[in-house]
Length: 439
Ligand SMILES: Cc1cc2nc3c(=O)[nH]c(=O)nc-3n(C[C@H](O)[C@H](O)[C@H](O)COP(=O)(O)OP(=O)(O)OC[C@H]3O[C@@H](n4cnc5c(N)ncnc54)[C@H](O)[C@@H]3O)c2cc1C
Image (cartoon, rainbow, N blue to C red; front, side, top):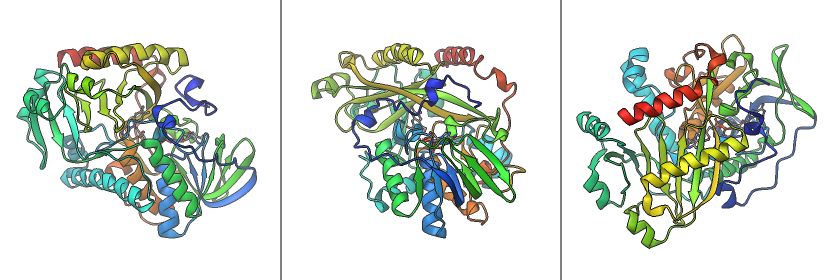
């Protein structure tokens, strides 16, 4: 095992008591892989990427893949995120993408981001998944006067609106330290676990075999195929997709070592807020919002009146350290939404997102490993991007050309000094928070 965090982060026997779990009826668990089996395509990981790849393979190519999941479908980030179905997936700006892949490459990535949102919308309709989808649009909040001045100075993308403090107040989006925002018309919030479980059900209905409690512990070439080992069985497959994102074992395959950097993201959800509390704060909108900090916050009012507030910056995945991080996150929430201070936290949990050494996702065949593919590295924005990435990579898994954007087919670099990723994380978070105060 080669993983960056403490074992608590990967303990599939424990599914965090998130608000999503408390508000979802879990299906019967899928059974583990037992004995030796064969499949044309094996998929490691039953999150949005793996399940969408399996669905595309079944529906478009008639290939019924076998999915091996260490926990149960949706156990990873796909069942515990903030539910923002929005643009994103790469950490690079459009200018940086254009300088590497030309204007056409930047446009191709921008188109992918839009299509990814539409993919999720289509999945919800096609598989009749009721995932409590909320209103269209997303707010990018300025956390300082300087940040808002930069928003005002930059050209506005088509369809976007610039909102100053007064305009935010008019629309029911008031918080302390919010200086203005860009309102994009794209994206919508959803219940992430209902979406993940709906995909798993649809995949099973399409003939996909999904094995839970089946962590892959070995992956080796066997002639022209691959052999995947689990505790109770093994699977031989012609082609393999690694869709393990922030929960990856960096030895599966060894190529991954040092090329990814999982980061902790944590979420708290309050008790339902009364209408009076919402009015007192001036936050009555269900539009989803995130801010311009490097160590960002994301937040939204849930359909049942609770407030969801998430943030990054946690250093350790040990359960006691995560519990301590709640105090930090809650402090930041209370400072921004003082009228909600009396509404205690009813649910709090954390999970792993995945950065890469190239600051973009990877969705292609692993170099010099014919038949081995990976789709991962969504940089904390995978609800839409991992869904679409999974769909695209299925075409390559079926033996065709890879229709993923050039950006995500580019080689994945290693982080410099990968062994220092964890030891330096505390320093990096401290510096980023300082930069946020000055920005
Ligand atoms: C707290 C939090 C908030 C977030 N908020 C948002 C948001 O609001 N909007 C957004 O777009 N994105 C958000 N994200 C990111 C988003 O959830 C992910 O990008 C997305 O879910 C990735 O999907 P995936 O299928 O690639 O990976 P995952 O859903 O993480 O699935 C990977 C799966 O692989 C399995 N696995 C790992 N190793 C093995 C193995 N050896 N054998 C078998 N199985 C294995 C894991 O158990 C896991 O279930 C958030 C993430 C977190 C943690």
